[in-house]
Image 1: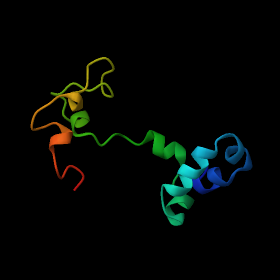
Image 2: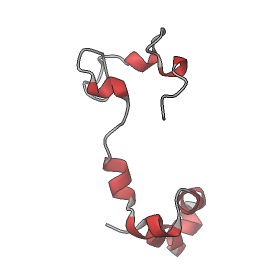
Image 3: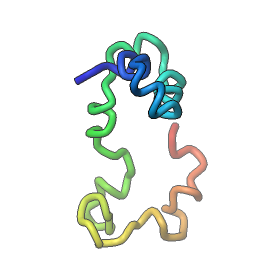
Length: 85
């Protein structure tokens, strides 16, 4: 796999996929870009709390099951003030 820094600096990527190149540069510090890989980022498992709760429907876990995150109520992500804290 190639590092995000190497991918962002590749002339072919910069020419054909300029937005991707700029996003890779803007997405992290230089130290992280030198170690992180785009493949690793794409393969990273989701952090959605509904994904881990097998009692809730989740399209990522079971395609076509639905998505509990689209529901309403106190457990809905938009209702949580400190979801990312």
